[in-house]
Image (tube, rainbow, N blue to C red):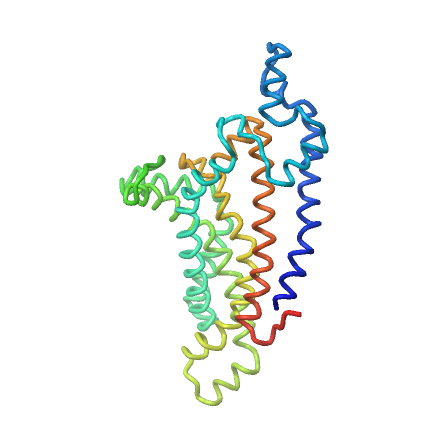
Length: 307
């Protein structure tokens, strides 16, 4: 297994190199002199040179590329501080919303999918399927605004927007974004996992277990759930990198000072160092999660052997 992991890590090097190269070339083509975009029209050459130095673009292009490749990013031009300090400052705020939402959403998706798949053709199955399709059809922005009005304005349970430091204050502000995130993503996961569960229930080993008198609950939780975890891991790997970068729309609507909101401000402010940093870090996290997923495959399913 260790040889497999090392080989995957080595294969990830040219992928990261390609991502950084493409992003760097796009920035160079789109904004050959970013200092002028930041400075505006009425700036002297000395002021432009100072901005170029701050952005790290006063050196040659190969040197700029090497600095990015070795994670020597200039300070954010919008926030006037290190991009790494911004990650440690804004990242926990995004994780405070994304991690609870991820686990609650995944747990509800699996529980509901197993429940309705075991009762295929029943009223519960048709009702949940209808609600899941309805949830997938309604735009996420509409759901967000509707829940903001219902829980925030009508019931006055949670703040509509904002953030406050401190565990209990942050929990109060994070509750509504977590609810919105769970509701928006629930329908698609239930549909997917219900389909996968139905395929497993119709297999020969499940029919054999039933013929031997194994209780239905044990079949679902012991045999079926173990095989359903394979597609769960596959879909999860695309979600986990987003936990670190946060939800751009969600944090923007709720005015949460997380990494997603920071990234939106960076894009609007043409903050090239911060955008490059986010692209680089997100690609690294995604590649690492691909390797972790392969390893977890072998843990969940003994038939999978890493070679």
